Image (tube, rainbow, N blue to C red; front, top):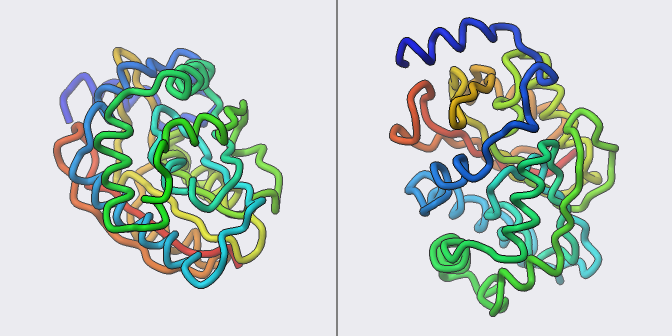
Length: 258
C-alpha cells in the first residue's frame, strides 16, 4: 500500500459506517475501474453463484412470485442478473444517492458489457439463464431501485438474496461487519438461498480522490459470522491481485438461511 493510502487509512481507523461520505461516492469512476470489463475474479465468482442458484432451483419450478434483494448494489448489476430467472422482482437496495442514480441510469441505458461479457458468462451452458433472450430489458422491468441502509433491513422479507462487497467495505469496525452480514441473512425467509462476496483483508480503498473504510476479514471470519444463521454450501477464496493495492483476494460464500 502506498504512503498516501496508508496516511488516509490511519485517519479513518475505527471509522463507522456513518462516518463515510457515501453520497459523494464517484459511481462512474468506480464502475469503470471495477466493472468496465469482465475480470477473471468476477468470472470465477459468477460461475460459483450461477451454478449454486441453478442447483437450488433445478428440482422445483422457480417460484413465480419470489422476491429477491441485492443489498448494496453499488454499480454492479451481475448479482441481480444472476437472480433474475428465479425472481419476479429484484430490489436493488442502496444507501448512496450517487449509486442509486447510477443504477437508475444503467437500467434505462445499460452499458453493453453487461450483456456482451457478464450475461454471456452467466448464461453459458446454463439453460435456465439461456431462456431469457433480452436479459437487460427483463432486468429493467423487474428491478426496483430502493434507498436503504443494510443496518435497517427488515427480517424475513425475501426469498433469495445477494450481497457483494458490502459488509466489509463500509466500515473499519468488526462489530459493524458482523451486524451487516447478519442483517442481510436475517432479511431472508428461512430456507432461502443466498450468495455473499467479500474483499479479503482489505485495508480500505479510494474512489476517485475519496478514501473509504474497510474491515480486514478473511475466510474464517466469514464462516464464524454465517455459521450460526446459515446452512453453508461453500466458502471459497478467489485469487485476485490486480484490482488495487491493499487486499488479498476475494471470498464468495453461498448457502441457505436457517
